[in-house]
Length: 79
Image (tube, rainbow, N blue to C red):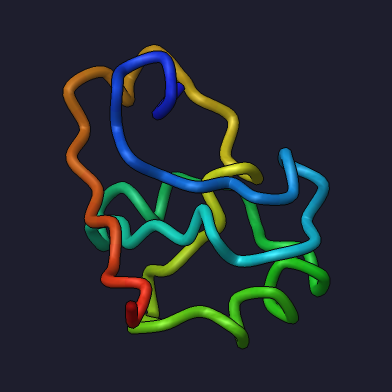
């Protein structure tokens, strides 16, 4: 979805849950509606910059109609 909308988000592993380059920070309100994280996602998030309590990997989020217009923050990758 990010790439389809010209949003710079790397996604180096192609959604295989093998990196943290699609790290996104959600509002608490939206975060509370997301499916639960798998342990493997938490492991990858440990490698992310600017980790927050509402951090998720974008490749693990199923986009829903009610997310239309949602704003997420893409953290600085440290480079």
